[in-house]
Length: 349
Image (cartoon, rainbow, N blue to C red; front, side, top):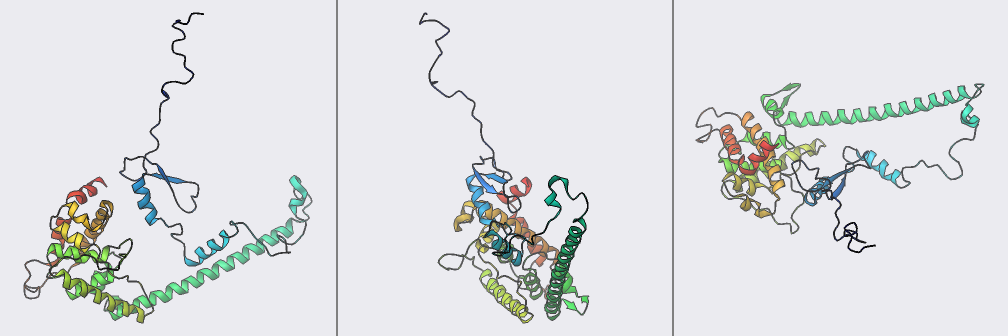
């Protein structure tokens, strides 16, 4: 054997480098993200063995809003938690066994019940069980129907007291309320009716309306108030909070609690962005770019509704001498907010 043979000059016990092709791995499932999906996130209830693949930034954002019990009422959540104690397996009382001891079709193995000795009894038992389940379901539906009816009557009582309903007739103010689609629609309608926003500039209007659309992920740890812009915003925002207190009191009189408190955490950011500040400056409060863009889009959506439903002033005197109507101010605020990364994200979507 020749040691200088060309047939053996490439033989190695261990290659000097791994020449196997390496796969890039799955990508991030977040819309628009081109990063690597290095982290798994569950898809949710009834899809227990399925997972999303996210990058580190987006898996954190997904986990902040993940709720396994979304769409379940309180009784369903309690029932699920109770069943979880036994691994969601059927249980029975000690000493009773799974059920009454009796022969049935399964006692004959694969041959079933060839002479029909037990089939009639099994069918009768199944029918009785199905009838009992149907009665229980009808009772639950009837109970929920009564709750919905009582809640509807209370909501009608609030709307009648505030002048949005006149008996069974929807008033002009009620039609305007119906055109607002936001969690705090009643507060927005009252702000329009009482003219709290009439004298504001576009940037000030954006700051004040943001209190109706923004909701902080968590309150400040030190309990301090959020940063607020100057000008008329410092007078209008407290007036909106007082108005919310009045409406919440009216709801309590009718045994309701729908309105959450306005959140002022985005007011300074909206005001600064509408004035043309740079994104780096706007994010000084600790907002992430994704949270900022999402909050800005929600704000623009409500501003557009306000521009469409705001009452037009009859004259300059009724408008308080304002140089523009509230509708025009809202549209100017939309134009001021829809720029830069906010405008780009709208095109990308």
